[in-house]
Image 1: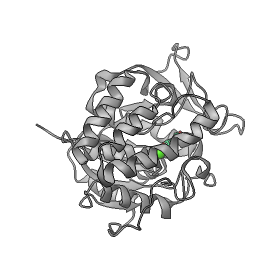
Image 2: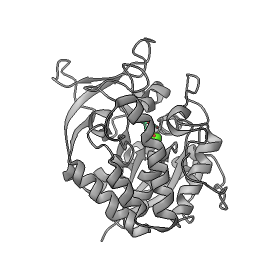
Image 3: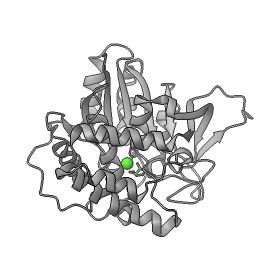
Image 4: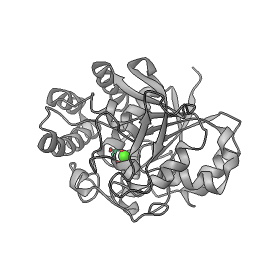
Length: 313
Ligand code: RIB
Ligand code: CA
C-alpha cells in the first residue's frame, strides 16, 4: 500500500485529539509531524496536548513542533468554555514524558516542504490557519509541494459557532485564512455545514470506552467532556466531532459530498469578521478556490473512527 504523507496542524482540543488518533491509527497515512498553533487554548497547552495524544497512541516517534502563539494580525481568542482550561479536559492526564522537537513549526513546515517533491505532502490544518499562512508568506515556493490542504473551518449554510457569522478557526485568524484561501493551492474545506451532520451518540462513546485500556478510557473521557458543551448549547443528542472529518476525507472521500465554489474571507467588518462567504450559486463568476463539503455518511464516519481507534487500542 502506498502511504500518503500528511502534516497535521492543530490546536488540541478534544476533537483535534480524535483527528490525530484517527490518522495515527490508519496505515494509509504517514504523519510526518504535528505542528501546533494557538487556538482552542494558548500554545503552551496545545503543544502539551499534542504530546499527550501522540503518547496515548504510543507514537511519540512523530515529531511535535511549537508554532505561532497568536494570530497574524488580531489578538488571540481561545475557547476554554468548550474544551476546558487545558484544552484536553476530561481524562486524568499525567504530564507528557516526551519533548517538543526543536525549532519553530513554521520553519519546519518550510524546510520539510522545500525538501519534498511537488505534490508530495498534504496539509491537514484543524485549528486557526496561522502557521500555514505564515509559511506561505515567508516562503511562497512551498505552494507546488503541497498536494492539497484539507482544512476544518468555516461555515455557510449553518452560520457560525463563535459569532453568528463565523466559525472559530477562521474567526481566530481571518487574515491567515485569507492567505490560504487565495493561495491557489488545492483546498478542501470541512466546514460546520458538514461537521454538524455527524453528531456523537452516547452509545458510540461507550463503544470507544469498551475498547479498553488507556486509549479507550481516556478517549471516552475526552469525548464525554467535550460533548457536554454542545448538548447544553444546541440541545442536540450529541456534539459535532469537527476535526476528524479532515482525516476521514483522506481515508474515505466517498463518505462525503460537496461542491467546488469560490469562497472569500471577511477581514474588515467586526460584525462578520471571519465569515466564509461562499459563492454557492456562482454569482461572481470567479473560478472556484475550494471544494466545500456539506454532506456526510455519518454512520460510515463513526464506523471508520471506531475501526481505526481499535488499531491503537
Ligand atoms: O469550530 C470548530 C473548530 O474550532 C475545531 O477545530 C475545534 O477544535 C476548534 O479549534
Ligand atoms: Ca481544532
